[in-house]
Image 1 (cartoon, chains in turn green, brown, orange):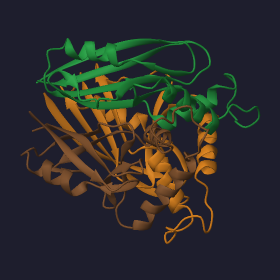
Image 2 (cartoon, one colour; image 1 turned 30 degrees about the vertical axis):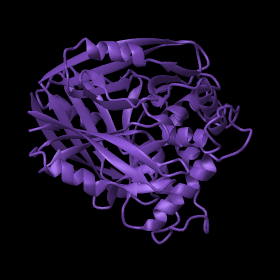
Image 3 (cartoon, chains in turn purple, cyan, green; image 1 turned 135 degrees about the vertical axis):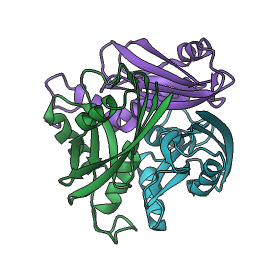
Image 4 (cartoon, chains in turn cyan, orange, blue; image 1 turned 180 degrees about the vertical axis):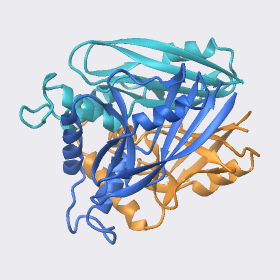
Length: 139
Length: 139
Length: 139
């Protein structure tokens, strides 16, 4: 039984979903672990991790619009607004979607379904550099 | 330290919660692992996994109604509607509830609380056959 | 490779976020495991676990207000109300935020970001005694 740790740096262009399935899969494949458990952890409170449909780009646009509506920017609505009107909505979106994912690994690959991709969900308007910690344990 | 992997197939009758605690517990009990970590991963983007109250059936009905209201079917609201009016709401509901669960195992059992059950949450109207990957690591 | 299991008992004063980062970190540090994976599991269906901003207290107040609005108490709205008007909203809030967290461990510490804290999110009005199962695997 072995472990591997890595930090993935993801540059986001501002709000929306950035697919990271490729980078994550390449890192997993390079660890020489056939069967195991992969964990991703987003080290931020205004970005999150999501498994979502990887085929239709419209799904990503609808997701973004849904969360903009659910946790809207609105002057005066939030007590916390020192860091801009998009900051508190970003925390709410991260609370709703979560900062962590664990995925079993078989034959050196995360067992994602055919239509599943792994996404970093950026919740701030501005471009950011996000750190995702990766942990793999297995044999 | 050992690992076990399994795929559970769950047949759903359409929208709503299907309890899988029994099948999952039986598989865990059969692996001969006393202390460990159990991970469940739903390999779909329109179904999810939930730990919820296992006693009152009304809780399941209220949960279903809440999510129908939060992410309603509505012609014209979503850009993505090629797969039917229930498809994009299903993706939104899966994003809000998550496709993965990890539960510590002690004395050969997942340490669920007294009132907790594990549910597959089907978000499509039609009956589906869903795959849940199970991973167990421990000793 | 080793494992450790523990149950953390958290006393909540009623609705809102209770930070548990300190207790969790001390337990992890005491297990003699440098690299590994930490999993927290909340054994209840009306409380949940959240990684959130640990700096500005206003964030916690805004989070609480947001969820009160999203899943409001409302007589007659829910089929399940035997345990009081705050019970079904509590289940909904727990479904949206989740009862489980896994965080990689490096150099004997969970790899939380600078502004991240671990919180137990109490969803009932009354004070409660909550159990959080902790599992650590690593070397």
